[in-house]
Image (cartoon, rainbow, N blue to C red; front, side, top):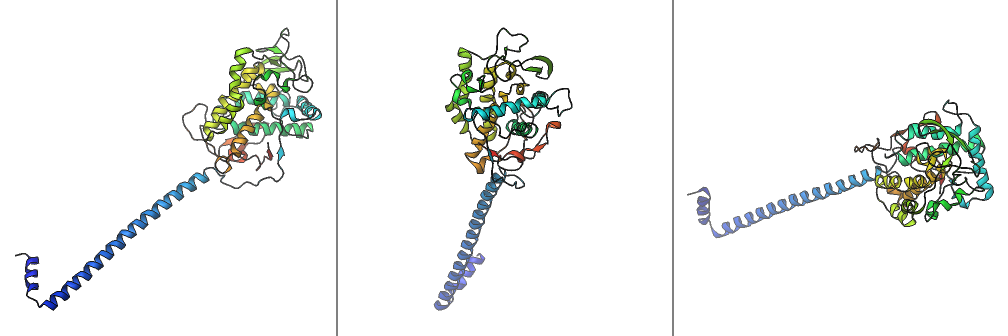
Length: 363
């Protein structure tokens, strides 16, 4: 007989009252065991819930801090406002054009036999084009600081009192060749003269404040020529115009991730304008055409609008590749942007917010 059987047999010989007492004791013991089991189960559940909460909190914190600078940057109180070209008065347009022309009288910062006007297309063609400025995460940030250096030169070297204007080409998408920026009296001159020689991919501009402007290079090569344009016509220009339609831009601004937004903006509107204007605008030395800066200020404005739509998520959203067309996504806010003698270097985080750090403007 087993020990359990022997115990039951022995217990059956006990008086009834003692047997009842033993049953009560065993019942209380079972109750205590069940209570301890419930407490243990409850503890396990509580610990599991706490782990889940901590996990979600960690994910939230990491997602949040991924879009915030590592160090706080003081915000400016009175940001300048950049305006669309056609909204400027005739006097304001004239003041801007004169400041741009003035750069051609200022010596080169790069130590070359050229002017400060030439330094910007020279640097863009030799450093910006082959470096981090195109088809990388830094496309927008690199050009944002490049524009700032240009605006600073206009203000400090040429006494310009205003700020960079932008050309909102979505207002002219049906035919950008009729945009007011091409006006000979209040703009930058038009398409040029087909009979003029020494042009590049088009015709020498022969009207407006930059008529017969002599330029020194095409891309990274030294090739003297005149400022040239060659507006597309018909179906060709209509095809490129699709990227700058208001509805297309609305769709673009609804893009959720920075990397997707930046690449779509670069491959769409960014290329649409130079391919439509052609001439000097269509090569890496494009800043030789002064309309380049109005075009890129509009691109910067669209990035600014995208950021403003969701500041907590987008203001410091930055991702993508460091090297052009690379599949390695290692870009970060601490990445340095280099400008050599053209101006001071900055980190990406320094210029993500146009109302903070060294920048102080809005649209």
